[in-house]
Length: 300
Image (tube, rainbow, N blue to C red; front, side):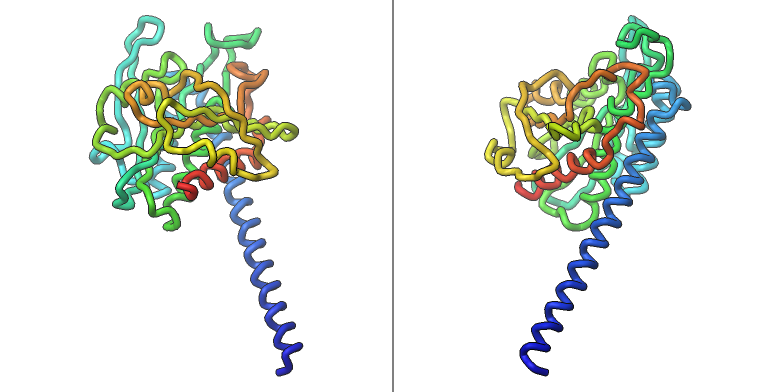
C-alpha cells in the first residue's frame, strides 16, 4: 500500500469514527430530551393538581420521583428508604411531607449533593400571582425542571465516568410554604457525617432564554468552586452571570456552614401562575444547564 493510499485509509477511518461519535451524541441528546420532557410533563400534569405540599398529589409526585431513583439504580439514603418524612405547618395546620434522597456511592473521600424541590402551590391561593388564582398551577419550571435535571444527572453520574466523588440526590418537599423540607433535613444532622464538597441547588432551570442565554449562579460564603471555574467556562449556548445568593433550599445548609451553589435560569412572567406550563420549557436549554454541571464536576 502506498503512503498516499494509507493516508486516505486513515482519513476515511477518522471520518467514520467522527460520524459515529456525532451520531451517538445526537442519539444521546434525543434520549435526554425525551426523558426530560416526560418527567416535566408528568409532574406538571393536571392529574397532580399543582403538587401542593402535604397533599395526596405531592405524595403522588414523590412516588414518581422514587421510582425514577430506583430506575437509575440509586441507593436509598435513609437506611432502607428513599424517604425522610417530616411534619410542618401550612397556614397554621399541621401537615406531613417527605424529603427524597438517593445516592451513588463510589467509595470516594467526599460527596457532591444536588437538591431540587418537587412541590408547588397546588390550586394557587395566596401564593398565586395569577388573576384567576384557584386553578391548577402546573409548576413546570418551578420546579419540575429542577427535578428533571436532578434525575438526568443521577443517570449520567452513574455511568461509571464520574468516580471522583460520591453523589447524593435530594428532592425536597414543602419548599413553597417555607423551605420546610430543606430545614428538616439540615436540622436532622444526617448530612453531617458526609464530607460534602458542595451542595448544588437546582431551582427553575427550564427557561433558558434563547436570546440572552443567561444561566445565573450564586455561591455561599464558602464555595468549593473558585470563581475562575465559572469565568473559564466557554460555551456559546450558556452565558454565566453571577447574582447575590437568594433564599432557597440551600439556605438551611449554608447557615450550617456547608458550601453551596445555586443555579437558575431566572424568574419570568409565568412564575407562580397557571401559565407555568410544560410547553414553555426550553428543553435543549435544560440540557445545556446539565452540561454545565457536568463541566463543574469534571473541573474539580
